[in-house]
Length: 419
Image (tube, rainbow, N blue to C red; front, side, top):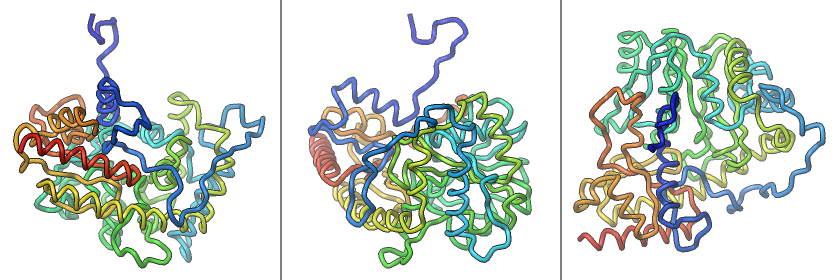
């Protein structure tokens, strides 16, 4: 019997990282195994790093927090998120975020799923390549039609404003989903370009749904930024309740607490009300006991200290990763301006290593994990028959330095076997 033969059920594919971890476990991988190196991981190292605030290692739970959380989270946390964005991006602006502009959810996927469930019968644009989990997100909800927008390596995987306007007007897009910085390419829209994107959304009445989960991992202007650079579209919103800008972030990446499963959506009040209704039937509300401890993590001085430590520490790992990859003959078409990933072109390697899937499978024999590039060819419902990015892989420098060193040593052994 196949795994999709039960009446009424379809075969649900695993997202890229989940797939590779499933295959790695079949080959004997277990978390913490000192012989393995996970260069595919989608989370940052969660332990202490130089200059960062102390990590939270103990949580005291209020007995009242054993009950369900409000669907959109506790007002105290919602207001804390609003205050942080006002402090970071909206000083001296008339329009300010309040708790009514914030919804708390159980991680980024839950937040994005709520948004997707609240969308109407529209055309929604998304980029290629982009985050693997978007594929099922764009497939399962049938109210909207996902429209792919291809980004070219020749243009640095960037979307020129004129092209975006043509896509929005020509295809009648009412929403645009984007990760900024982008997973997997690490490309970033910031400054004047980001301001113009927000202006475009306002002028063309197209909602801009921005996944900002890597917005503290910024490597432009390092290392002398005081305070450290954090990129958010919130800086360029004019009216928080009128501009069609929806921002998603959380503790997973920028605070390095993926296990807490706490995220937030920042948006006009009408959008928050809509996604609250969606959350009431999708997930029932976020993690309750961790919301009160999260308040201290959102103090601006804590955010600045953590962000500066992240940028210095991960910048060093970024440089190390690119140097090791280039020394192996692996091409990096565009250096990452953000995230903790390198989008690597394998086409110069000997067969079969010039294919991302083969590179991954052969890497398992050396106890190293990567993520094939084809998983970032977001293709809802398999509407397109030609897969892209077969010659690519995503390499994560999220792990600690000993793991990176072990992983790249393993990749060198792998490539030597075929050279």
